[in-house]
Length: 191
Image (tube, rainbow, N blue to C red; front, side):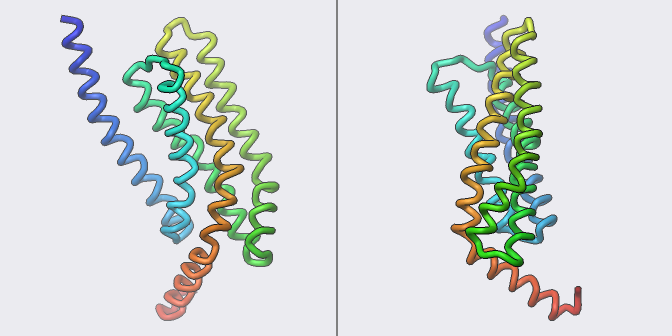
């Protein structure tokens, strides 16, 4: 009957969630790693976003809210794809600033330079998510909109406040990795 079909769908979606989540993470990691030519920057870009996804989903548990089982797979994928750009923009600004400023000044200016774009993009996602939440007549769709809106808020917060601290903390490794890449390019005769 209906209960068994629901249980089967939930079991399949849990397996799909793991596959989709892992492939999404791998895809984003590879794109960022190749774009920045840095494994460390790819990891640092994903840390605040993954933490934001975890915190976003944790609110439902803390408040005792039942989630549609499809919500996890949809919201985590959308939140990762839509908000990782905030981290990419910030890291790109940090790298440019780091060429002429120390790590602390670079992190402060990076946040200042990136803030407007992050808040603009994030606010659009928040508004769209909550509009869906408020106007949808289907509770499951409304819940997804709420999770997307809240996820954007949490992601913006983590990128604005956590990412600068991570970049300062791992600056020594970033500079070492950058020197290694330059040395390797010189040995290979690349520009």
